[in-house]
Image (cartoon, rainbow, N blue to C red; front, side, top):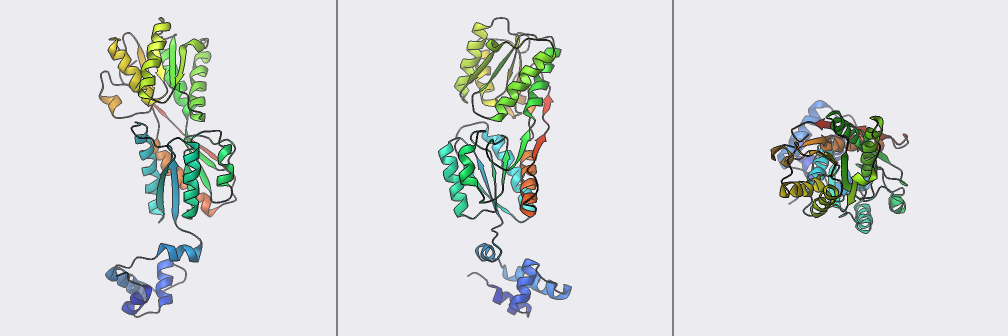
Length: 334
């Protein structure tokens, strides 16, 4: 049977108003009385009603998190690290987190946001399906503050927390150039995301800054699947015989690409150098261990939660884009 505030008041020998002030910290209560109420709360295992509190304060202390999680995707590990960073920060401030998935579908994304609205969330952290997010503007308009993560959302107002994708790609390609490589292939997915745009720009800028002409024939784009990675690497090496290094700006495509390299017995790094984007455990234990551009997913989550909480307390502050640094982790693949 659920304990109510009246029972707590009787146990502590105070009024129900005093118990309410202690729970909500809305008025001064003497230390002795406060301690008595807290002891009664603990003894009776009292749990305040979130519904009643939300009706009173117009706050639910609940944040929605929406990401394009897909079954059997290695990138889901990245999403979970982001979610863990968000949850750890929100928990310290007394907020709960509701997780939803768009499945990388715009229609599902809109449906999930509408579901969040019915649950009266206080704010939303979202990794949008596409960076060109005009389709979200009507759904998100004025319901709650929004923080976008991983991808910049064009056409929607909100703060944004991103990894420095441009610099990560620039550093990876520069490292390959410094090793003497001049014919450097590039493989990534064809998702409509600023993340990919920035990695492409970083690849090209590193080449031009070192006096190497950008050759579009060395670049491959495809679906976000393991099988596509295999086919893109196969096509690239069969058509571009002079390639000595490849920067793969997508983890799942890296897995498929490596299968093809192992199949044709292409030695890494003696015959081809490889750097991948994102640092997953499997990349450390294969032979040779892969050099990678490491993102900070947990820290992205933490920062996104901090930004949203600040937005809730200061709704009129200017919208800001935050960039967290990446790190080139050098192992033995180049």
